[in-house]
Structure formats: C-alpha cells, structure tokens
Length: 398
Image (cartoon, helix red, strand yellow):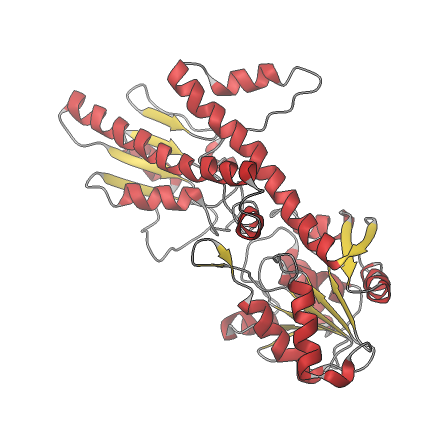
C-alpha cells in the first residue's frame, strides 16, 4: 500500500481519525511505537473501547485502505496525533510532538501537508515549522503547515469527527486553505479558518471554559454538603432560570483534555490566568474531599457496628461508559481507598483487568459490601438495589 496519509499516534484520537479517513477510500498508514497496537490493528481489531470503531477499522483493514506500522513512510499528508503530557510543575511537554515531527522530516517533499492535531501550547506549530526548516532548509515555503485540534466526546467519537465544526489554522493562508481542502473530504461540520496560534489557543480555551464551569458545580457541592442541602435538587431548580445552566458536580475532572489543557495557559500566562488557575485548584481538590468523605463513613460504620466495613468502589474511568482512565479522579480515589486496611472491592465494567486492582463484578460487590461508593455514572450503576443496612455515597448524582 502506498499511503496518501500518515497518522503518527494510534490512540483515542489517532485511530478513529485514521479509520475515518480510510473509510472514504483513502490509503492511510497509522504509526505507533507500540508493536502490540500495530499488530492488533493489522488484524482488523482495536485496542480501545469506542462505539462503532471496531467495525470501521475492520472494514478499512479488509479493504486494504488502513495499515499500521512502527515507522512512517512517504505520503502527501502527515497528521501528528500524539500525547502532550506534563513535566515539572504542570508544564506542557511537547517532546512527543517534536519526536514525531523529526521522524517524518526526512520523508517530507515539496507540496506536502503537515498538520498537528495534538493539544499543544501556543506557538508549538511555529516551533515545529522552525524545526522542519532548520533540518530541511530547501523545503522552506514549499510545504504546508497547519494546526487543527480535535473536539470530540469519548463514546461518540466517530459521529463527532464527522459532524463537529473544526478550527483550522495554518502558518500562512496557503497552508490554511490546503488543510481545509483536506478535511473537507471527511468532515461535514463547518471548517473555520484562522491562524495557527489562534487555533492552538482555541483548543485550550474551550477546555478551560469547561473546567471553570465544572469547578463552579463542584464548589457548590462542597458548600451544599456543609449547608445540608441536596446539591442535585438545588442545581435542578436553579437551572429552571432561563439564563442559568449549571453543570453537574462529580468526583473531580479527568481525561486528557479538561484536566490538562488549562495548565497549558496557566504555565505560559501565570499572572493573567487567575480564574483558570483557581478552577484547576477547585477541581483538583474535589477527589481529596471525596476520599475524606469515604474514610469518615468507614470510620463511623466501624464505631457503630464494631467491625470494619466492606466498601465497594464503583467506576474508574474519567467519564461514563468508556474505558479511558487518563487523569481520572475516580482512579485516584479508588487507589487511595484501596490502600486502607478496610476490605475494598473495585468495579469497572468497561475494563477486564487492571495492573493495580483485582477487579470485582458489580453483582458480587453489591452483595458483599456495606458501603457503596459511586464515582462514575456508568449505565450499569443506574439501577442498583441496596438493602436498608447499606450506605450509599453517590458523588455523581446517580
């Protein structure tokens, strides 16, 4: 197969993006450093949970439009879809983007399109432009470079990749238009042109806005707990106002977007981003508060009943009905409770094994445990039947 498109990174965004492009008959080579991931995809299977993705990948591999490898090859379009983790004190680490870029620089030729989709600090696209032209000065002005962040919801990725609007920012007008022409083949949502820096900031601002809104809801939950007010009822009533739309509180904020992206702004603009930084503090504190609530409940049970309680912790993923544990506050809470002397059972219906926990099925956990803690609003947890002697601690409004 001679690929037209090479995607670097076959994770939660890279694989669905590769599958979508390949499903239109475009030859796609997906690149990942994990040989197991490469082998799985080449067998027509997937290594993540995402509705409909398995069928699309299987069909694309069968037709010969999608192939995976550990090294890139010559193409016309290169998509960088790799993680951007932290280093130090929540400082963004673009080393994966840089490494992926260096890997394809020898393959670049006149007229090629290079696009970063990875969430990145402002100025990353320009840094990669400088890197490319430093190592391949003969290409300056002859290739197109752009930034186009994803904005999808895990659990609905395949639909949203097609129908959501996209913001596309090139290093120049020609690059922007070249990238728009590329995405227009696969995306039905509107494609909004801008420059690379604005597109980078747009992604960070979208998730920072969500983080601030969630922080308000989480802060309300802390206040209402002290005031002996049902926060779920309060928010429902407040939202009857035609211009009020308070989100639902939870046990924190997770995922590799909302829990991460605000730090990219705070790191570069610490003096100007006071509200964004405070929202991060509120949402980062919420898991600690949840841990304290659970431990207090365990202690009260022990004092009252003269035996240590058995606790069922329900949910590890960062949001409902997915297997993604990245930056999950539920995972952090579960680990802290699991370390205590009390008997603890962990339930996560979307994964079969975990390297830290011995997972328990839901039915067994409910039958044997005295305290039931719900951390994630998975569908499986919405019809629990408890006996009158069991204590329910519900952090997500099931």
